[in-house]
Length: 282
Image (tube, rainbow, N blue to C red; front, side, top):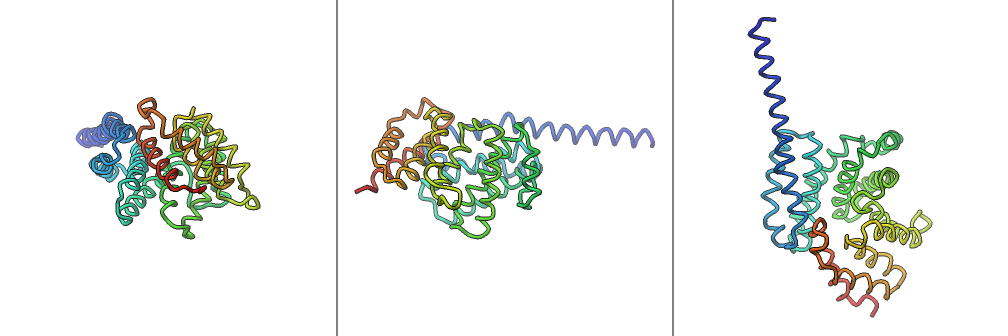
């Protein structure tokens, strides 16, 4: 190989390396703070209006780096938060569906970096068993993104098939690091088992165990735990005292004391108001 070709190859290699490093730099210095900013907002309307600018930036970067794990994780987190806000802003169903589809796209890619989740059979079980604690962030945000999409599908066959993947992945997360994201995997199983009959492996006893664990691990600071507890278990068991106590705890919680959960906690407070106003036990 001539010196000129060697030089050209060296320049090309360095260019690719520098572009890759630049993407990582932007992810660390721009995208992560932007997503964190969305999650720490208390003005839900502002998130609905302002988040698209961040999302367009992430979309553009993923066009150039479609398999970048850091970007995919940030994109999944950002779209999950945005979809949650849209539900409170009175957005048209079509807009919510469009964004949940994008959430699934990125979350699915993120999961693919760790497991071939669309196989759903023995191979999936084997790959999950081979995952370790370092894989938990990708497993969690990937499966949480799928769950965000599932919740908008009205029980379609495709969504129920994906729910099996989410259940298996969340179970593996519990085994690897049950404390991740303030015990959010326990919160998933608490809500899931509360709506699943005992003869199918669910029921109130299992639900309460996981909901109590979620409350313990979150130190009562992640208010969606209380809202889920009230909406599912308390109503299922007709426990009005528990129901009202949990929701009043949510409404009295000072949002600023847990800034890392600000957006989700503000959404939780709005949901708590609705649940109390329904007069479910009247």
